[in-house]
Image (cartoon, rainbow, N blue to C red):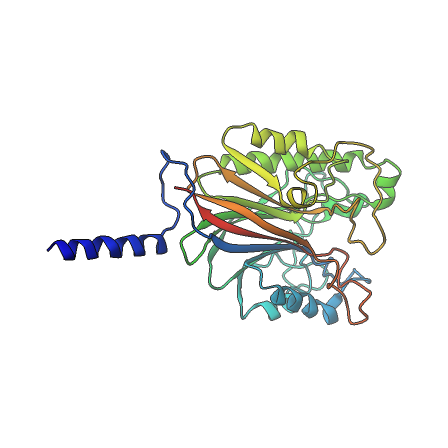
Length: 347
């Protein structure tokens, strides 16, 4: 009898760590020593996949973007400006990924519709251009699709009011039972010439309104699951007050911590100070980087008292291998940005 009890205790000691997932235990905040579950994300503006984008990838090159994403083997992919050539983008991904409902296209889509009226009495294409893909080994679903309350620019300023921009929210579970929430979005842009001339104040106002809307929404829906925020945010820290109005607010809330993954790795966690808002890209083929910082970003949030947390392994700005056959011209006007995490238990 004693030997049977010893064997049972020994078996439990071996099996319990193998089946550990994220279970509630708010009284003890000591990290369980497990290697964590690898989880990677990639954000990519696919360059306006629309008929009117004469310099974009178009129908011929869009499958190459999809294949590049497949080769990256990311757990979750968030794309933006996915309009007319969604079928060509999705086809290479379909065998390995589940995916979100397409938001419809623009010029050549028979299902395309125009919103009646609009905030200023102007019609919009009823599409957000945002879509999520997640590995078939994961359990996932889009739970929300939210449009921005404020936009700026209908016939100028990057035409942001022509479509229904906003963000989408996803709930993802790994086979090991680790759960997280992901937000994918596209924020207001500004025309480069207007930015250099200092004429983008209204663009920045609209974008900061979107940041505050996102911040409040994320915090309202925050629970014990870690959160990843990614997308084409059209944001640089020297131009937009994201540090004071979003990062600091969340970190000082006592409810969670938020980190820009690229800032953590490349800047040792030091956010650039607000400065001259008239910014210029590092080079015509830099993917819109300014001082090495891209407008595409990946943030992660760890709630206080959670039973799982995200730990960053690495961030990659893919400006070395995202090219057309000539080896010189990028596949699109943004380079992909990926972050590689481990979802670790906290007991």
